[in-house]
Length: 202
Image 1 (spheres, rainbow, N blue to C red):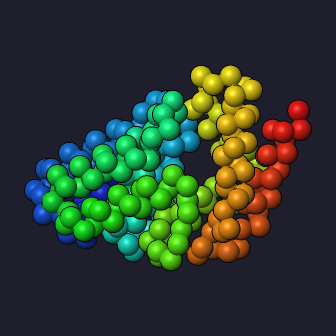
Image 2: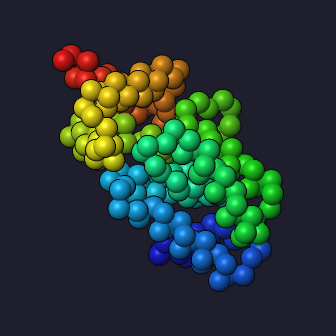
């Protein structure tokens, strides 16, 4: 399914009432944002991975949040999740999505700032989808890290190592990384720990 059709289908299932042309225009804006040239990991391939993940398309709120969770991605900003949530809220309101669903999708986007999930099933779906890369085989995990490093090419290596180490430790400090796929927990923590050791050993 093409990107535009995929978004329109999800928006309609979420109750969107705007004309098809409006939904298509919103889809085009989102695709353009996900296609920005500075993105090397947080791109359309990551969006597709999230949308294709277990359970996402079955929850319109989670699917819409997947569309919006990295809609704004500025490696120089620490407010990407909040800005993405606000943007998604505006776009979904423009689409005529019911207010309760808009608020739900925005809350899910904000959750991705720290991936702390309580007992929210939609949050668990989205968090597992967003973090799935952490449990990939080591060579694939390294490719993910290298792609993220390219997005932070403006950051000197010492600052990158410090910042990346902080991110890894915050993930390792989570009581649970995966809520629907516990089989991913051990390989993900092994990868995170291995990368952290490499960053701090020097």
